[in-house]
Length: 140
Length: 140
Length: 140
Length: 140
Image 1 (cartoon, helix red, strand yellow):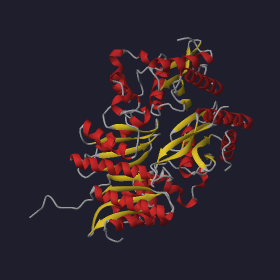
Image 2 (cartoon, rainbow over the protein chains, first blue to last red; image 1 turned 90 degrees about the vertical axis):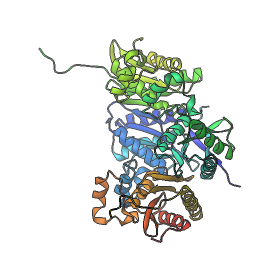
Image 3 (cartoon, rainbow over the protein chains, first blue to last red; image 1 turned 120 degrees about the vertical axis):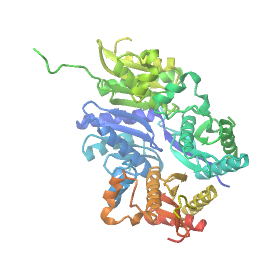
Image 4 (tube, chains in turn blue, cyan, brown, red; image 1 turned 180 degrees about the vertical axis):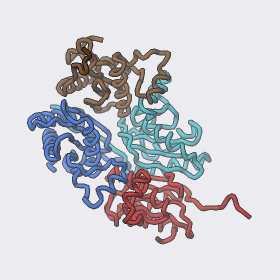
């Protein structure tokens, strides 16, 4: 029998706030203020924070990183090298290959993504990883 | 204990195709070609059809109707009379009070919405209602 | 002597997080999930949260409310009745008169604004007021 | 005698629905959920489906692929290598060279195009080809 509906998981605002807080703590620890964006599995925004001293335009790239990771269900830098420019163009720059986007995966199911921007790629990923760990998301 | 995740339902593409097909059958029956748009609970598009003879710009209003119903979890014309103009403006016209948007509700949970446009308000609602019934959605 | 520069105050991310958290607590208390948006004195986003169950399009109106209050340094509904439609149009709908936008004022200086949306006007204002109080902002 | 008008063929919504359904069957068969977009000869949307599990941003690239193929009346990857980046830029990224866009040609006349995205280029083309065959379109 064909099923019209299926069950899926989603992030609560308690989860979103915990992720934001944890990313902030990590960003303060490494001394790099960040823009942090969290989206749901359809790319709609759930939460966002621009830390004091972060680059304000990094909000835009952090959003693109989050959107990309929610869509491809993988870190944003996993967009294949060969198609990066073309895929970015064909999606009106919704897709980015910049590092700092990470999917939020629970027991194999992608429930959204976090995008971090303002630091180096490694710093962005470190803050995102800390946020994922705080809510018990799968290791990426 | 605070919960970081929750369980929710969503529409499969089998459900989306059944809704589109049923809306088409109803539209043919009443002799009014329609634009039909189905979105998920975050307003992201799941399926769309522009019938032969439908007004092509009705795609835009059908999308706004679907978006509105998914957000307010009620028929689009339920936007209160007193705030219609202001709410439309404040959301860059994402919210419309035009009739023809209906939430897709399963056991009380909104999983998305359908928006229909090209006919009269009553015709649009009739096609949307037929589509809801076809997948066993709650009566509105 | 003419001064080319002046000192002003601004909200830290600690202030933003405290405002978001307090608005959430109030929203849970009154049983109305909300979209909460906080902007700086230039209208640039500082923080945002979409609570579980809030209307996702209320993000847009909450942003317009916050932007309006930061600009006019007063509650959003203070936009004079006579010019509401015209001012909205002339600012590409950046200005809204919907209730739920409140300026964040410290010792008479506006450092930003909070916009809340998803509930009734009174509920939106109540959550915003709680957030202002939590950071010791001037009473409005 | 100069003719001011001419006769042309176009795709009916029965054709559009058959193409969507066939693409879905093929996508399920190869185990790769897809975003499928069908446009008319003017690039205006006729039908669209985002399958369960497809990348939601692939909607955008599938649309660009369909638009491109309807315009150049050839597979999207036929955009010449040497001009790809420049043509994309000059058309505000309406034109893409990503594989997965195919023109719908009937007796030599292009009546629209289908764009498929979410899988590999080969998977996208395979689903599009199946849809073309289902409505008796010319082999490309």
